[in-house]
Image (cartoon, rainbow, N blue to C red; front, side):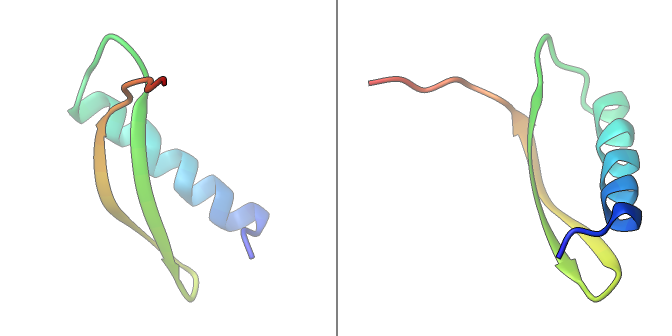
Length: 51
């Protein structure tokens, strides 16, 4: 479950990633939870796909 504390940790991690990997748009961030720890697995520029 994504508790409020975990959501805040995830938001802080995302804010740090945006500073490290500046893009002209949003980042696509993959993450996992291990207990109370948030792990960032991968981050890349978000590319909108379409069919």
